[in-house]
Structures are given as C-alpha cells and as structure tokens.
Length: 260
Length: 302
Image (cartoon, rainbow over all chains, first blue to last red; front, side, top):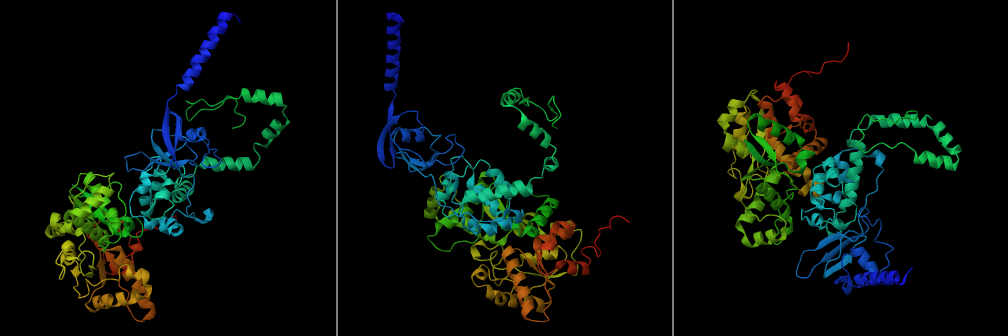
C-alpha cells in the first residue's frame, strides 16, 4: 500500500470515528434514573447500551413475542403510553418502565370437552362480567387492538368476533396490568381463538384425508429413501427442490407429482 | 326507516327469543333495527351510589356510540338495559359536574351531554306506529288468548324514566289489544320479580314469584307477557320451584311481548324460538290455534 493510499485510508477512518462520536445523545429515564443514549436506538437497545443485561423481558426482538411490554410517560403529558421495547425508538425525556410480566388468572380446561357455547367462556372466566367498559385495556394495547370491544363480544357470546378482533394479540399482558375489573383479557382471547379455530371455523376436509394417508403409510417409502440418502446428495436435493411460486394459483402442481 | 338499536348482551345469548322476533317484526312494520356499532354492556344495573361514577361509564359509552352513529333516538328492547341507559342519559343531561367528570374520564371519545333520546320498543310501537295502525298489520289475531301484561319495575320506575303512567300503566295492555289478544289486568303487574336480589338470596325466589303468579292466575290469565330477561329468569325458575314444593299448580307460560308481536304479524313460530321459553307456551298456542296443531315436518323417505 502506497503512502498516499495509507493516508487516504486513515482519513476515512477518522471521518467514520468522528461520525460515530457525532451521534446525538438524548436523555431518557429508566426506572427514574437519567441516562444519555444515542438517538435512534430502540428502548431495548438503549437499556443494553446503558448496561442492562436482559435475560427476561426480551424474546424475539422482532415485535411478535410480547415479552417486552413497556410503559412510559413524557413530561407535561398525563397520558400513559405503551410500547414494545424492541420496536419503539427512544425519544427525549421518556420515563420508561418495563412490564415484562404481569400476574394473570389463567383458567385450566380440558379443551377436548369444550363446545362453542358462549357459556364455556362465562364458566371459565366469570370475572368477564366485572368489566365496566372503562377502556383502559384498549389504551394499553401496543398492538392497537380494540381490547374492550373484544371483551364486549365475549360478554355478548360472540366468540368468533372476539377471536377476529384479538387476532393480533401477542399476549404482552399490558391490558391486564391496567384492568379495573382485574380481567386477564389475553388469556380469555386465547381461549376464544382456540374455540373459534377448533369449533366454529369449518374444518378442512382435505386435512382429514391427508392425515389418514400419512397414518396409512403413504409417505413412509419416501422418508425411508431420504434416510438412506448420502449427505451430499441430500443437500443437492434440497437446493434443487421445486418451490411453489408466491404467485401460484389454487390449481398449481409441482412438475414431479409422485408425492401427491 | 332505520332506528338506532341497542340489543344488550343477554339478548344475544339466553334471550334470543326476545330479540329475534323483534327484529323480524319491526322489519315487517317497515323499521330496520340498526344495531349501534361497537356497543358494550349497558352496565347491567343503574348504580345508586352518588359518587360511583365508574359504573356510569358503560351506559354513557353506548350513548356516545349512538351519537356517533348520527342518531338522535336509541331504541332498546330489554327493560333493564332501557332503565340503565335512560337513567345514565338523564344524569348526563342534568348533572353538569358529573357530566364533566365522565367526559373528561372518557377523553378518547367525543363529549356527550344527553343528546340521544332513549326509548323502549313499546314506545316506538305506540308513538311512531300507533295501536290502530299496528292492529291493521295483524295477520293472525291472537283471539281468545288471555294474557296478563307484567311490567315489573324497570320500564316504570323511577317515575322520571317511566314509559307510561307509573302507577297505572296501560301500554302493554293496549299493545295486546291491538294484536287481538285479551289483556288480563292484575294488581301485581308492577310488583318486583326479585331482580338481582335472587343472586344473593336464591331461596327468596318463591316468595317473589308466588304473589305474582297467583294473582295472574286468579284473574284468569293463561300466560304472562314480559319485556325483561331478568323477570323471565326469576319468574320461570321461581315457578318451577313453586311447582316442586306445592302440588296442583298449573304451569303458566311466559312470553316476551315481541314473540306475540311476530306471531300476530304472521311471521310464524320459527322466528319466536318458543323452545327457549319457560312454561311450555307451545301447547297453549296450539290449543288456541295460533300455531299449527301438528308439526309440519314430513317423515323422510318411505
């Protein structure tokens, strides 16, 4: 490397370092203590930046597991705000506390004995009727679910509607933490979605036929063949496998139809 | 014509036999019952504690939903929901301090100050259709049916929200007359069925039920006509208890007023869900030739 090149390289590094140093720091408060953290970090990364080691209250880091429910307030605003720590980027003067877990009553049931009758939910969760429609649950939902409407649907015996409204629930428990009537909304919704999936939605007929075929050993021969295949051949098979295109229609079939 | 309509939770489960004939009947009369979007529980019972505002939130939120729907009148069907909603509405209209507290608590909603008028379906029938016009729509007059109007409490008390003269109501009787039935007046028609007292004192159910049923029977009633699922529950269960403990009591069928309306309008028994009623009303209706003598189901095959 020539001297000129070296000079150029070190200048680039310096600019890079300068850029790093120039990242704007903003004040946030974690459990009441002030920290300065780089702008643009998520709440979760900001906590790690200031030294927290998260072994609970963090899971998928992708906004779908519901482990990092977080509440915060900004000065001068009485409104309590909610977020998932892995999704929300820090803002100046946020007062942050994580609510990674909140105790919630979960009913025990043998699902095979449950029907789609509204009374199943009433019996397992009689506290449902303690709801006073205060709407604190809806305001606490980081997923934007109309939580109170879904609870109303359950009271009205409309399990399908409760399942539909709560579809995006990630069970973070923030609704439960705010509930005036001490309901565990997210457990009730899970029950609703289970009943909906197993007892209300029409069952796919082809699934039963497929399970029957599997149990009767239709695919045993193919699996045995794969088990005998050498690793290199297996890799080749995997890499060259035919994938259903994203735009495939209902009548799409693979070229090799021997597995159908 | 479309009417903003508040059903109430029980009407979607145990009291479908109150709602379904009502929806069908009103359609036959040219009114579409337009369910308030996103309605929640009415609050179940109006809270009498002066400083207990949290239990006003549920009814007021429903009134806000009706306002958002762009309606100035809200029709109810369940007498208890009517009572809770209308009283909460009065509170929002008349009490500025409480109105402000409630509006400020529900800061995610539009402000409300009692703009929506809460009515019961019987009032719609009386005031917007009229008994004469209703009687002209009757296809199957309920002739010879001696039915006792039972008001209970919640349509008439307190006086400020009563749909009729609180001491001497006639609205259900007029209604029955226009369907061709014979209303049977009896002095206990506005006596309390026991309401939610039965939850905490289940054994009292007989003492509440006995005077009401005895009085109706002694005045020649063949059936009771109700507007409230809680009355239906208490009188229905109370009657069973009474029959268990006291021999020789004839079972009194209990009807919702909407079932008799649908039947008289010729909508058929299917829409009425008589199978959900207390006191096996179908045999009485067969006796009066108001539903077919023999089930019209044909044997399959052969």
